[in-house]
Image (cartoon, rainbow, N blue to C red; front, side, top):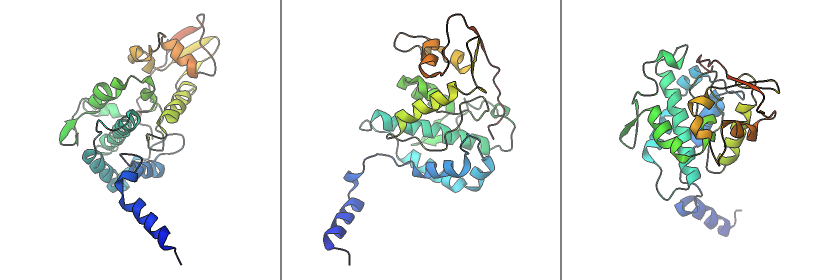
Length: 236
């Protein structure tokens, strides 16, 4: 028999919203990612189409629970990173099958989704919201649905996992030889580091300093440097 005291405590935990530690539950998106993104970041767009009800449930949650001033910085950043990645999936599956996101007309400028009644584009989320946080690691968390982009993490970002996840994704990307080649003799890095050069100039350092913070092999001043060709083929 369950003790009455236990029942009272359990009911209080269930019904009292003040107990909640986070202002947004990304569990629906987390489950969709686990089902449709592999450990190495390959996206099953057909799977997302089959599970589209999960996506649209999540879009409703995003629209009805936008960040408030009372949210922590981590909660706000996790919300916008997940929103960017989820709506990128929507952009692709709305026109699937395609070979590349660049087959679409103005993929980052098109206002194709609403949050709290306001129309947004992916470009607005990235440039007017996400980059304003001043954390260059976000470039390795948001995904442009292409092979040369940072891989899609198959979990949702949350306030609790955010800092460790951003560090992990940054290290993974910088040390991935298919996206960056860093040896003692030659350095050929992603064009992300030139497109967003000013974002990586943090704490008085430059792009090289940022990369060296996470790279297994460090870049020195004598290395021959260049940029890799960007592969825009779909990340599936």
